[in-house]
Length: 247
Figure 1 (cartoon, helix red, strand yellow):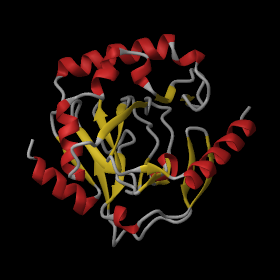
Figure 2: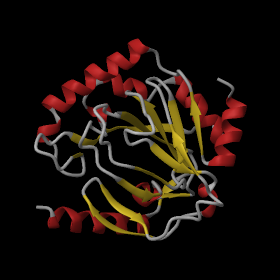
Figure 3: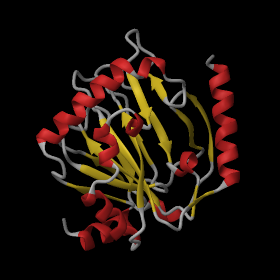
């Protein structure tokens, strides 16, 4: 991987895609681990650790802290290639990978994700943090592809409001001008990785196809980033209200 080019594109656009980082065999390992966690662990987790789609079979929408449930994901947080990329992006040899997540967009029932910035949930100050998204399934223009607004990370943190949606409790009050900050579909094949900043505005549409669009997410941040207590308190209050309303 050309770390200098990756870091430059990330700085300019707020996101960058790196192709074929993981092999088919590694993706198969992640698939097997996910199947076990979804079958055996997800049903006993609380909201906040897992969310389900509002469909009769209740497929998993998102699941957090995968590293607690399988060694494949704890090892992922030590992956030297991913660490090198993040450390190059932030010019910080102490930058770390901190959490492994799962984002499902199941066939026919994957729901809309409203436009937001991840820092509404992660609360970093300074916002030197990003999410690495690993494609487990093909991500196409039809099955709920991740859509990022190019350059929107340079706007700083934008006003959010409660969304009322389980799994994505906040959304932007107003999205940036799409002519000035054009939307880009992040189409990926299994094994590809996308990095997007916590300040990058992004969203995804519903999946109405017969092809699932599952992805792993890995949270990363520089050694300079700290959690902002005011932002965190606001996030917790919104979550508590949402969870109480949905029982």
